[in-house]
Amino acid sequence: LANRQEYIWISIGLSLFSNLVYPSLCSLVSRNVPADKQGAAQGSINGVKALTEGFGPLAFGLLMNVFEDTALPGAPYLIGGFITLLAVAVTFRIPSEEEYFHYTEVHREDGEAERKGLLDPESEEEDDEEGEVDEDEEQRNY
Image (cartoon, rainbow, N blue to C red; front, side, top):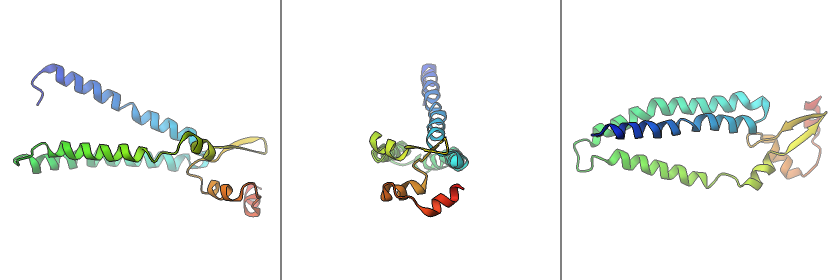
């Protein structure tokens, strides 16, 4: 419980910083996803955000209610901390800068730049072929 007004203002300040993550994430995704996949990528981000904003408070409120009169009333905070640690562990699976640039190479075709990003299934096929021209891909371009 916040028994002093300063604690509430500190909490509000921290939540303001956390709200800066979403626009940054959308910006990063929009810069690194091909134009024809923008809708799917941004829709996925918005869908996950909507689910977490809806179910997060419900789940946390339920946990607070369940653990309220137990020997460990702070268990929901421990669970939240554990989930945060899992998220940090997942960040170690993010590709290195070298791997990132490998998958976001800019290919020049017909004078226009087209990004091949991490969500592009054809970029994996191209990595295996190392420069071989795929006839199906050539027909799709025309």
